[in-house]
Image (cartoon, rainbow, N blue to C red; front, side):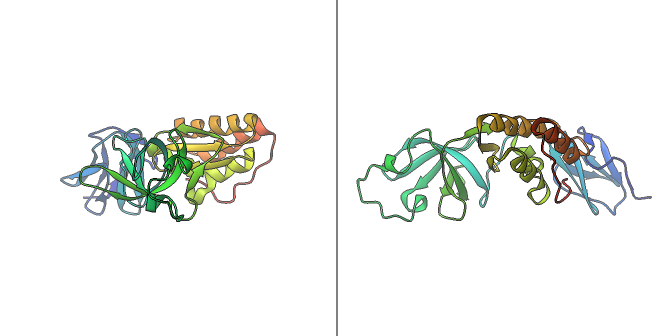
Length: 239
């Protein structure tokens, strides 16, 4: 049988759609083999990496995994640490030893370090079999967030918002002079002058909504140049 890709890169497909024929192609996430065909198992955007075909979902809930850097919100201060909300169905815990390298005396008021409703950048160290998330803030770039605002995006769109080698989010930062951190759990922190902060937030939402569009990097570049009046350069072509 002739090996053939039946769909285009980044094309949006539906469950049951034939993506490729021939045994030379390999099914990956969101696809399965049926005879000589590779079939879509879910709604999403096609990505072909040489001979491997997978589907990037357009919607869905963030699935936490060890090593992910996320933005989390303190929701409770306990005797031994902090409880955090992570934009998932699972609660997270951060112990005193994982929160800071400082010595914390027994019985100290932990609100002095992190209080309810504050946001932090943290790394997932473990997801237990009971679906509890363990977090640490001991590492480069992990810290409490001060000022700015936090917005939610679809966590499956995070790779598009960041772009290839960070190209997309770097372009937004350069255009708006905002500090931006994108958590892998779909929470994004933006901090800058109020008018520029709004432009950054609107642009991130635009990337999220139009993530399936081909030529997205050029589209966002034109948008940012129009709203900021800046001439931008793309250092590396986005996805």
